[in-house]
Amino acid sequence: MPGMQDQMMQLVVIFGTMHLVKKLGLESPEYAPFIRSAYAVTTVAILALTFHLKGQIQRRNDTTALEYDDPTPGSQQERVVTTVAKYDLGEIAKLQKSSLFTVAIVAFMHFKFGYIQPLILQSLLPLLNLYKNPLFQIHMLGKPATDSLKRPWVPENPFAALTGGGGAAAANSSSSSEAAAAAAPEGGSASGSGKEETRKEETRKDK
Image (cartoon, rainbow, N blue to C red; front, side):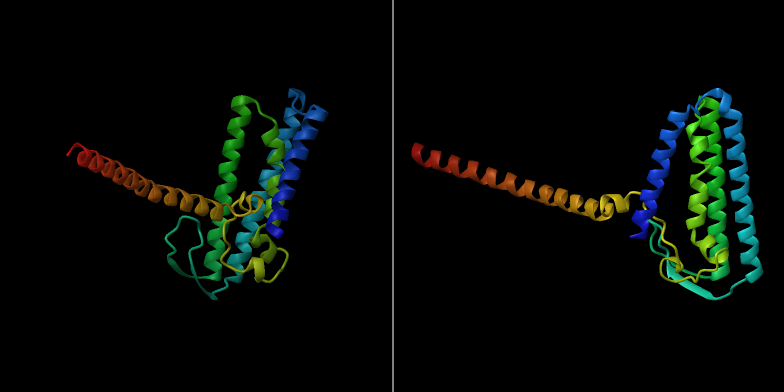
């Protein structure tokens, strides 16, 4: 499963990087300027690539009609009618906003609390994620928009593959809870009936 392999690769990168950081002592303040520079270069390179992708999409201006049910988790499955170009531009905008939001979080963690590891991780993971992004695969590597690259692209649950499908497990858990809740009143009714029959028998004996 490609999704599982991608997530396992990310975990290897994360834990491997954390291990190297501690082993090499990269958390020392003397390395901070170099790590900041590496992070800044990576961030600028990624944003530059997203703008390059945006330019390619606008130049191609693929007006092929695209119609689909919104695959975003939690959405009301609204029917979306658009074009390939508009869809891709929307995905680029999301990618850019996500990148800028991550920069803000990492910068806050570094300058407020002095954390070095987020800078190092975010100098590596975004490059890996951009390479795997369908937009990069299609517009930079020239791969056809088929199979896993077919639009629309469903946002991945990062834990779904590791848990064997959290949605199904949650549904089963919810069903079990509903079954237990439904059984509780029945149990209570049976208990009440038993007590009522006992009172009737005591009344007969008294008579």
